Length: 54
Image (cartoon, rainbow, N blue to C red; front, side, top):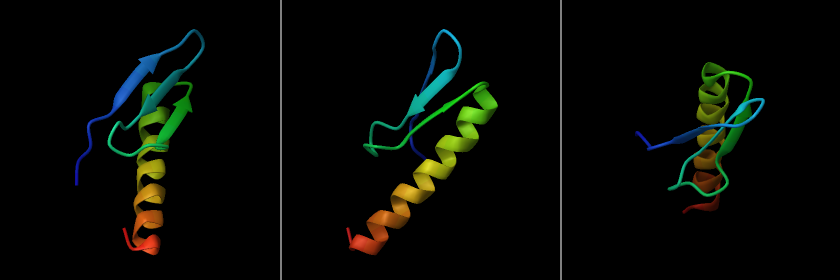
């Protein structure tokens, strides 16, 4: 499944989030790092939903 993500440049890093998955956020020094960390956050979020039966 694919989710639209928002990546923003801050003063010293990048941040990202997924509007459709509240709480799925990440920060990193590079775009590549923030993309990798956000992918992990999405997987973690979905696993939690599956455990809860949502």
